[in-house]
Structures are given as structure tokens and as C-alpha cells.
Amino acid sequence: MHLRREETTLPKLLRTAGYATCHVGKWHLNGLFGSAEQPQPGDHGFDYWFSTQNNAAPSHENPDNFIRNGEKVGQLQGYSCQLVADEAIGWLERRTDREQPFFLFVCFHEPHEPIASPAELVSEYPQATKRGQALYYANVTNMDRAVGRLMASLDRLKLADQTLVYFSSDNGPETLDRYPGAWRSHGSAAPLRDRKLYMYEGGIRVPGIARWPGHIKPGQEIHEPVCSLDLLPTFCALSGAQVPDSLKLDGADIRPLLAGESFERPTPLYWHYFQALGQPKATMRVGNYAILAHSDKPNQRPASGMPPGAMQAMKSDGLKDFELYDLAQDLGQRDDLAQRQPERVKELSERLLAKYREIQAQMPVWPDWQPKNKGK
Image (cartoon, rainbow, N blue to C red; front, side):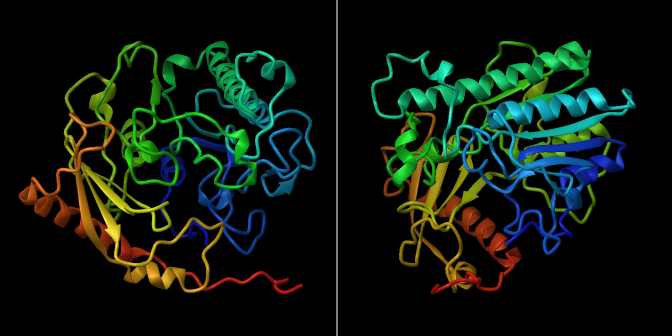
């Protein structure tokens, strides 16, 4: 599986508006990273890239799997987040045309497993008594310091006032004890229900931070939910890049929110994950309500890849057994309203099913893959 070469991407669109583009850190949009057999970051609109396929390996410390513009870098000294920050800052400093606008996509590996952290930061958490807890806290701290260095470079290069920075996680905290190395992962999504790999709020709701001096009022809190799908229409609107008419977007232009104005979302926020832990497998957010649906197939546990037949099964998967929660009154999703509000369930489930089937119809079916050394 991979992000197909013909897909429209944000860096491709921004390049049409004259932007320089750079990706540093985790890529994770193909299976054959660094191979000409599948598209790489440079094929998807990035002028410059310093990336890994998934995790920094063998860990965050002294990784040896980075590739820079198609060339293997070899073993590096240091921790992944600082190396990624170094590369991003270096790219900013080396730009010859300081008037050219830029898009810098920084994807830190921390605090994803396998975790490694500087000893001096681990020692800052003597109150952490659980196995691996101080190691994890130090991992987050190390990334935080890398972000701080990047922000300081924008200030130093006098780019801060003309640069919109958007920072977010990708999912809730790791599901503990899911695999042997997970003892190094800690944290909670409380008061939200569950965590990573679940379709409840604990798996999909994360904090986000936006920074744009002179444009975004500092210190304010916005409670309207947004999604990374909103970044493409928003960034294109800000940059003047034209979104093709043929491109149907689920995300929305959130410039009004950034300006502190009212905002109405035309297409509801939606998520699904066929291999989510337990049930449900899909959810949609409409106003304060979240409707969730179970799969009509036997439950599949998360896997490192797609077992034979999985893609075909996903194309035929159906939804049933809906749950309904009012997040304004029940943030922890403990009070299922489905039996008490059948009319609302009927209305929202129809919208969820329509989006689900639309995405199913668009899904490519990848050929079943088997390891070359199977049985050896």
C-alpha cells in the first residue's frame, strides 16, 4: 500500500502558488520507503526531504534509517526529534530566496515507540515511579524542546510574523501493554473514553495549537473541533493556491476560527478504522453529537499489515448497532442515548452510512502481499 502517485497533495498545490516545500521526519505513506517501486516524498510535491518510513530505527537515539532526497544518510548521532529540528532549521537557513514563501512539514517520531530519551531529561522526573514512566515523560520533553528550537529559529530569522504554525498530535495515547515494548508508553486521555486505536473520543480527540503573531490572538481557547483534513483548504485559501474543481474535500476552510469569528462546518467530521480495538469502527461528529457504528463482520485486531483478503473484506464491510452521545453533556461517552433518541439516530446514522459507503467506493484494493522469505 502507498499514497498513489496521482493523488493531489497539499505540497503539490502549494508549489503551484510558488511555495518551497520541505518534509522532515516520519513519512509512513508507503511500504517500500526509499525504493523507486513506489512514490517517495519528492514525488508528492516536496522539493526537499529528510525522512523515514515509519519509526526512527533502531530507536530515537542514533537512528540509521533516514533518507535525504533519495540518498541513505547512515547512522546519525543524537535523538530523532533534535535531528529533525536541526534539518528543518538548516533548510530554513539555507534558503537562497528569502522572499519565497515556504511550507515546512515537520513530523516528529517522538513519543512513538520504540522510545529512547536523554538521561539528563529522564533524571528530571524522580516522581515517576512506574517502569518506563520517566523515560516517556523525558521523551515528550525532548520533543517539546525541539519544537521550542524551531520556534526560536523563526523568531531569529524574522519569519514568525509571516508564518502560521500548526501543531497537533495524530491520535490519543498509546494503548498500554498492547505489545511487549509498550511498557515505555504512559499517559491518559481522561476524561475521554479509551485511547489510541479506539473510535471513542480518547482515540481521536487531541489538542492542537496554532501560532501566527499579529493574526491569531494569543492565549485564547477555541472549542470548535477541527481536523487535519481542514489544513489543505485553509492553507490553499491563505496561499492563493487553487484547489481543483474535481477535488471533493471533506475538510473546511477554518480561517474564520483563526480570526476568532463564527464558523459553520459544511461536512461533518468523520473517522473510521476497520481494525479498531473492539467495537465501534466508525464515528461522525454532528454538532455536539457523536454517532458511532459497529462493523457487521467479526472483530479484527490491529495488525502490522493487511492479511490476505483484508482489503476485499473492507470493501464489503457494513455497519450496524449505532451508539449516540451528547458530548456537551457527556464528554466521557458513558451515556448511550441511542434507545432514547431513535429519530436522531435514524437521521445521523443515514449521514454516517452515506459517507462510509462513499469512501468504501473510492478505496483501492491492493494485491495481497506475502513476505519474500515466508517459511524460512
